[in-house]
Length: 259
Image 1 (cartoon, rainbow, N blue to C red):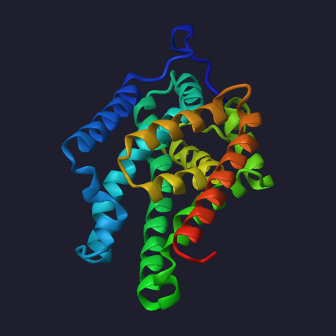
Image 2: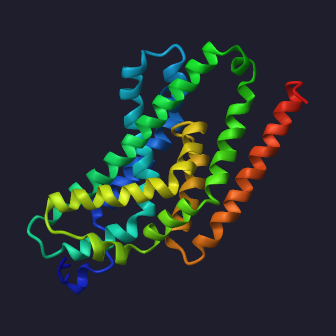
Image 3: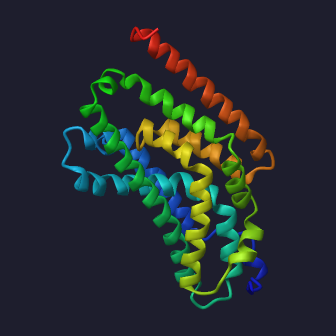
């Protein structure tokens, strides 16, 4: 593998279209929240009395992709910057960057689709299983506890290490051209999903377009993946999510007469 020598002026720069894409995604999210239209693409709204699973998924995925552009791409900017510098001398660098981002978006879109179908399964289970229907209060706290527990696993650490060392990742997997860029984006996204899927599941649970959760989780994931103290934040986040989920679970159990 040979990484091209970028011009000094290109080093350290994220391409302007990437910044514009992130800004546009946040602008869409803010506009959707301000106009009250964000709730229309919440998975519950689409699945309960919605247009059917297939069409609901097609309506959900654009909103999910906006969230990925707003939340996940910022956490991957170190690799984006390095890839832009490495491919600066290539004649097809713009297409290569587009292919890299396309591969990244494809994997995250696949995860969003799986999460949506999984949530449809939860709704079907609630409708078919009387016990779960009468104990729906278990679902939200359990999601927080699942996310917290994952923060403490070796898989989280392994995927986070890959995301926190973009230079060595690029050195191992760089190739010239759009096809290689697409493969690099897919490979990076697999580790990114492995690192952040549980936190994005929390985002999925609270609903697409919730600006407070979007901002908080974006800041958390950017910190985990790019800052020197990010790896030490992971168990703290896990403990907070486990504690919050446990507290909500106990409160909901008490409020619903289960204890």
